[in-house]
Length: 93
Image (cartoon, rainbow, N blue to C red; front, side, top):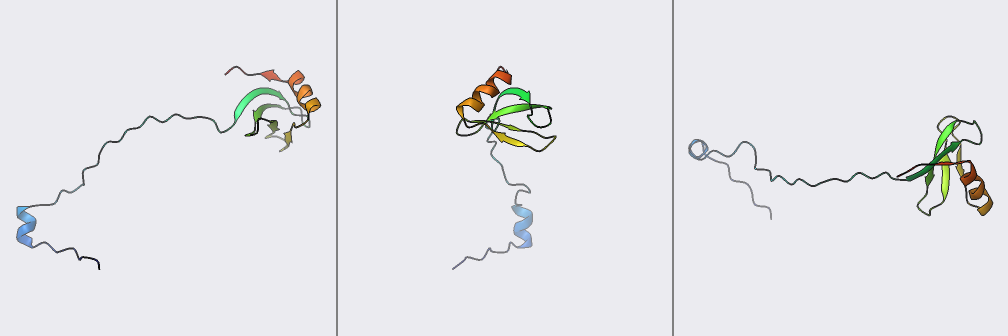
């Protein structure tokens, strides 16, 4: 059973006031922001020829996500990765 909270009398309210704001412990933690996907370079979109970033997936496969023509291109084969690396400008970390 739940215990009901007792109502305080008007006399108790003036003699022993409750704090208006409960005390909050200051728990400061350092936050390290990291990008969700690692950018490895910049290349031209194979469809619209705009400059786009090359990212790595969780399985370490490169892909391009073009914001202009909405193309999403994954490079899974050995030959496609070789061609991408030849055309890509690498980004220093």
